[in-house]
Every structure is written in structure tokens, then in C-alpha cells.
Image (cartoon, rainbow, N blue to C red; front, top):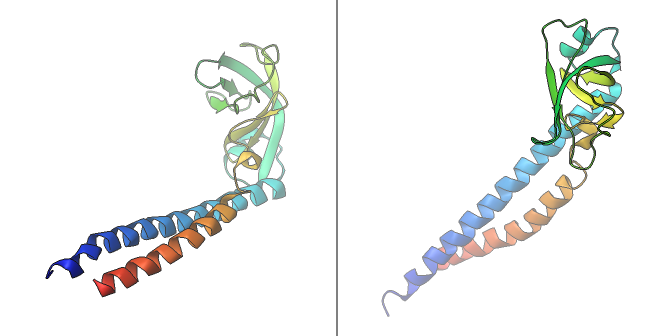
Length: 167
């Protein structure tokens, strides 16, 4: 049985690779949580803009006002394209979360709707949040999921290292 010590090496390598991927996922989730939490903080701290152009140039203010509805489509995830009179030639598109779209009568092509613009994105339209609203970002469970993955990955990494040394 001269080859017996080598049998554990592929298994040890597999443990180490899976554990490393789990830990990399943990780091990625933490980075996403920090980024999204920063977006939410900036959104809440934003003051009121006097024009849509101000809201297009940064995240320090939010503009709320009437927007012209150019088109709507339910085929591609409830996409709506709008424009603001003070931003000639500029069209902004937005999508609504599934089940969170406004009533079809609220958004008619050629009509107007109340819109909120922040950081160059439409965050609310016709009283409903859009996919670009930072408050819709999934930050609530990212840290907990990261901790759970770390609890699984760290022992797996230890087992992999011990197995590799003994093999």
C-alpha cells in the first residue's frame, strides 16, 4: 500500500478549494453590504434639488417633480421611459419590482407622472419605488449570510489543510 497516503490529497484539495470559494463569497457579500449601505445613507442624506439637472450630476440631492411619460412596456419587466422638460433630449428608463408597478392608468404614454430623480436614476415614479431606489437593495441579510458561510467554510478549510498535511 505504498500509494495509500496520496489518496487523501485530491479530497484535501477539494476541501480547500470549496472553503476558499466560500470565504471569497463572504468577502464579496460584505463588500456589497457596505456599498449598498453607503447608497442608502447617501439617499437618506440627500437634500431637495431645485432642478432635475442637479440630481443628474451627483447623489447629494433628490429632485421631485412632474415627468413626461414617453413609453411603457410590461413585456420587459414593466419598463417605463420618461423625460423632464428641463432636460431636453434626455430620456430616462426605469423598471419596477415585480408586483410593485403602478396601476396602468397611472402611467400612460403621453401623460405625466410624479417622479423622483436621484444620482441620475429614477427612484420613484407615480408613487411607486423603482428598481433603482436604494431602499430596495437587499442589505438586510447579507452580513448574516456571510457569517453563516464563514462558519461553514472555516472548518472545511481547517479539515482540508490537516488532510493535505497528513497525505
